Image (cartoon, rainbow, N blue to C red; front, side):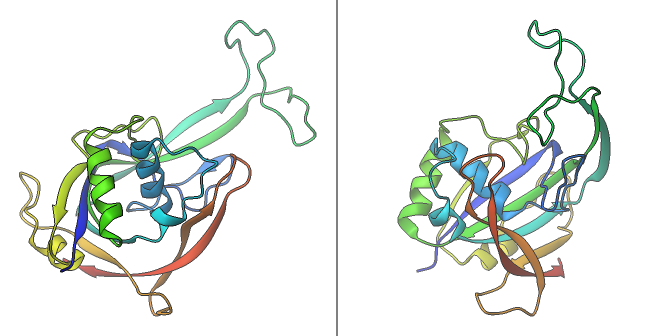
Length: 219
């Protein structure tokens, strides 16, 4: 019998970066696999030094219930006084400190809502459901500054992920979903490529990802 785990990702702000540069932090229009794996790691209390392989092996499909709108926020990095330091500046590639603050742009989705279905090893799915009900670390929607507005755990369903996404009731006030994003089987490259399958992330500077392919369709 098929089984899937359903997650509700909804909040005032979400940000699912997939090709960000340091000064321009983008967001995808739906959750990335790496972002969802990071959320699951928080639920499990799994450190970055632990390979995310088992979680990344789960197949992830998304139902976009509410697209949300894009927001661009202005940030500066470095400069001023921080925790009593008189010279708080961003580090340079040479290992020193820059003389001026760095201007950055951060992109977010406002008021979006997604239903995510994960398929894979049933024992792992059951363990994740238990941990999502009582996570070790706080959960976030792509960035730590983006907490969920409602419980992330929807529950386990003993049907396929496709059937679950098509059958699960919509959030209140919505007449219909917007679209589906289906992860294609390995070897099927007929869809859009996404380099968001985490292979390793031992530290902030060394992160490695693999490709997967997805197909979108209107709901």
